[in-house]
Length: 97
Image (cartoon, rainbow, N blue to C red; front, side, top):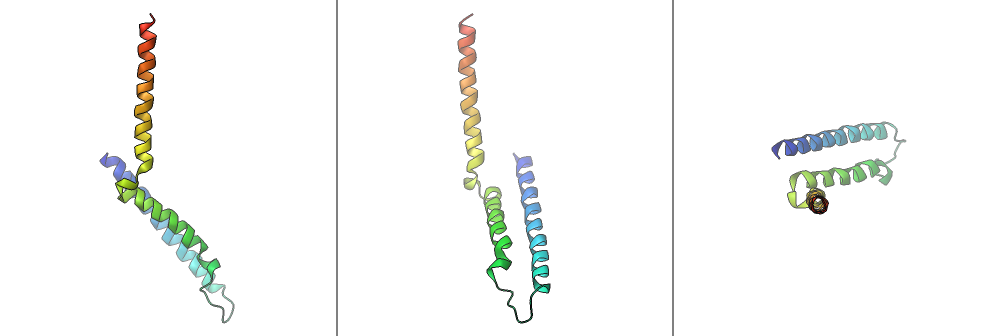
């Protein structure tokens, strides 16, 4: 359990670092390509930061807030369900011998 949490943290921090690094590069290239008297604050200059930022936020919720960890709970529930189903099948198979 602790190992999985550390892996999740490492994944999140890698994601966050990539987000910051790439967006800094985008800001730099957008800034050096501005036309004279053109404002940097245009929607087109923030698309990547906004939509990727939503992804980083979702990743943070998954890592830091366990109640938002619905995918893991669903996976565990599904595994238990399938194990029970297989157990019943095996029981029926052995009973037919």
